[in-house]
Length: 214
Image 1 (cartoon, rainbow, N blue to C red):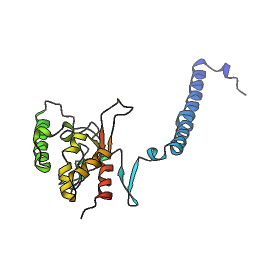
Image 2 (image 1 turned 45 degrees about the horizontal axis):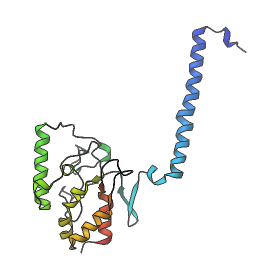
Image 3 (image 1 turned 30 degrees about the horizontal axis):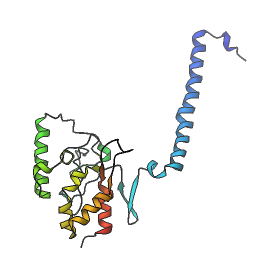
């Protein structure tokens, strides 16, 4: 058997480095991921699986990712609450109107960029016409995309200006829709982190369950 101590120092250093590499690869690349996967599946199965949401026996989305409620041509459906704008769009797909997990990202337009200003004004005009509200009533998240482009929540203020339109489309009273929004409004985490939010997918599913289209 070869005495390692008799080997040149540079070779001993390489052998030691190789041993450390193999040990760390086994621990960090195999053992740790397997243990974490097992713990996640056992203790947080839903979250580990993507926080998928089912409706009437089929998966309709994830509570962590926004989705568009639009027609085949990209027009917003009046019977549903609309999410905030999304910059997560596949530029090669004509029917991709946002909330595409494969293209998560922001527009990278600065606050003083003329293109962004023009887009915001266009969105304000569209929302003012669609929801029959004044531009001054439209909150910032209604006309700006999130950093990921996949934000699943909207502010209670944005939900509030959509209540009358959704109620009219579903032929129910605004008070009933307003109560539903309040039910699905999530408060700040631990009472002080973040801002109150409304998960659009969860709210729209509740709409279809309680106030189906007539």
